[in-house]
Image (cartoon, rainbow, N blue to C red):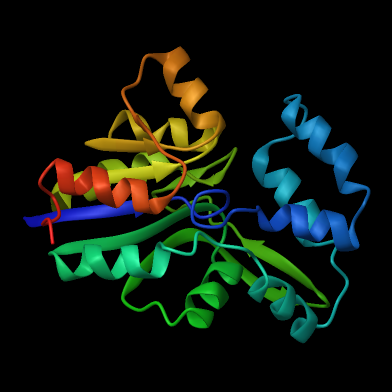
Length: 218
């Protein structure tokens, strides 16, 4: 059994802005009304994202340029290296799509990270998702069931930590050894009585992992 892994959500956790908001603000203003319907429970997450990502109508070079402008926590490249240099494996677990995540990893030269997400691809000026209902991690609502992923990783690793920021992240938080919560996830976990450590950035997570002995004090 491997020693430990750190698993992080991408949108709103590693990035400081969800990719769907970039698309809505620049290319798909109608998405604001869809966002309200989604948050009101009238649309599944995967329906909302599929509609937004397939409404960009730009050449791939332009889409990639927009992706490369996604703001991220400036400490995350160093944080990932620190995890890896101390015996941990790093995973990105996203209910968005791996299409834009891989472009961000490439931009920051982040290596040896496993991305577990909905498969995405460019076609006809838009981004589409290839959702496999037969996949063992399939979720009808999110495309990928984050809680199933964490449970599977717990079979491989002695310890699995998790970081997230929103409602989909409340489900894997049940199974993680430590959950680091940003933004609305803090209130959700509090209401569900699920233990978590409140944070705003990855430097705080690193400091907490040092206090708990997962990372050395240097």
